[in-house]
Image (cartoon, rainbow, N blue to C red; front, side, top):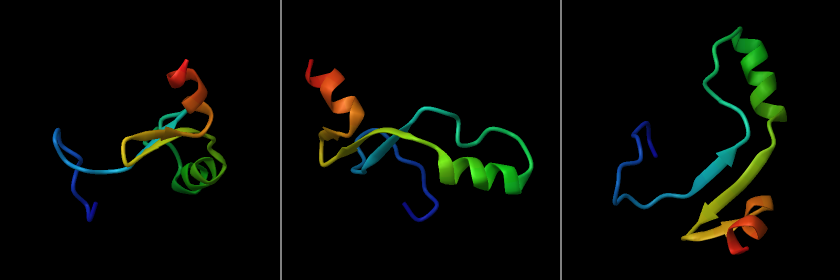
Length: 58
């Protein structure tokens, strides 16, 4: 979003992660962690996708 934060009412796609992408640490270790981090799900255009979709749809 061009360096801006998503605010209530804003449009945006959301990625749900299993870990904190902003956890403190060495920059090279943080980069490696981000590259290997599993995505729990995404919300695109209001539709839940990925592994989380089955849990949300019940």
